[in-house]
Length: 88
Image (spheres, rainbow, N blue to C red):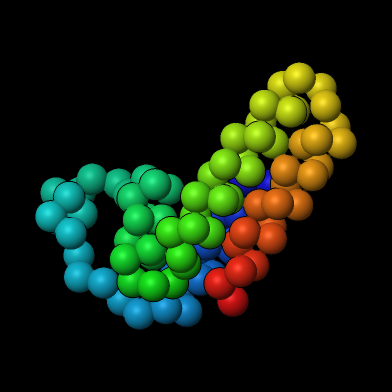
């Protein structure tokens, strides 16, 4: 699921405007999923509310998976997909 989420965010980023390269990028620091999400928020590609909702739902999904709660995990994953689908 994480790969599908990453692919969805990557597709949104590719379709959106470009941002200037950051100082960290010029120092060869690799971007993190969190830094990429922050940039996408800043550029208006995905709303802060959607990012927060997706992060919270992923945390719930991971916790449910660890607890062996399949139904709760699947519901949380559906919540992630809904959160990411808000900004089409």
